[in-house]
Length: 78
Image (cartoon, rainbow, N blue to C red; front, side):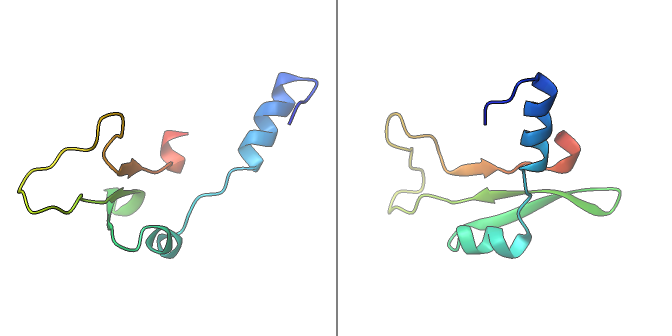
């Protein structure tokens, strides 16, 4: 995606980005809990929580692996 002018790079990045719909998020993370944040009564962003299942009440991720809580891009943070 090499372009001559920096504004071309920004424009290509902006128009090449697509936000996910709730159904797409559910399909990507079928076992996770999908939550949302609202602002002024409208959904502002979604985030996904995938809890690690184990027999102990508290479990930590393996070293070097972050927990699977994935904040998703929202239009208001752009």
